[in-house]
Amino acid sequence: MDTSYAVGDLRVSDAEREPVIERLQDAYADGRLDHDEFDMRMHLAMTAKTRNDLGAVTRDLVPVPKQAAVLPGHAEAPTGEDRMLAAAAHAIAVPTLFVGPLVLMLVSGKRSEYVRRQSAEAVNFHLTLLLFTTATLGVGGVVYAVAWILSAIAAIYALAGRTFRYPWILRLVK
Image (cartoon, rainbow, N blue to C red; front, side, top):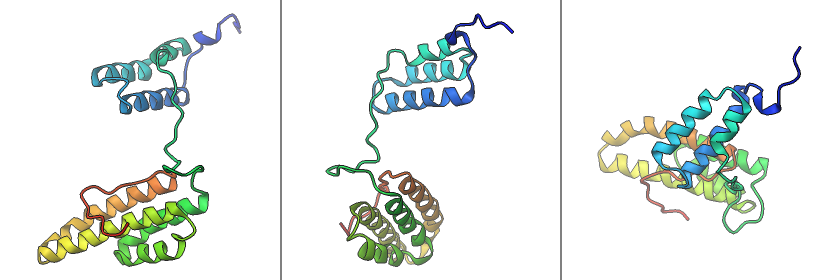
């Protein structure tokens, strides 16, 4: 067995590529990379064979500390219970429309600002859908298939401790 290889000459695995890809995605989302450069670096990261090749992809990108889980004006991230309740608010809205998230908002929202905001978002989304369906005399009910998908996505975001905002809704409940 030859042990003369330097650490940078060792081959990389998919698990070693993932943090690099996440850093590239964050840099692109922050506007530090344009689309063409992002595509080129993603290709280089996916085809890198050694640690040196992989390191060259992000060498000029300084890591930015993530603050996605911390709500503005709050000092700490939501607890596991808060994340579960927020995810439940989005998920329970599928069978109960706005009633389930409203109950969660009124009961658990007093204890946690994160749960209150996510529950209010689910209430607003399903109230908007209900108003749209009523205004279109039931034809808008077809949109509920999309609502289930969006509710599932919102629940996943909430489980991760991130804030989810539904697009194109009336924000009736604050």
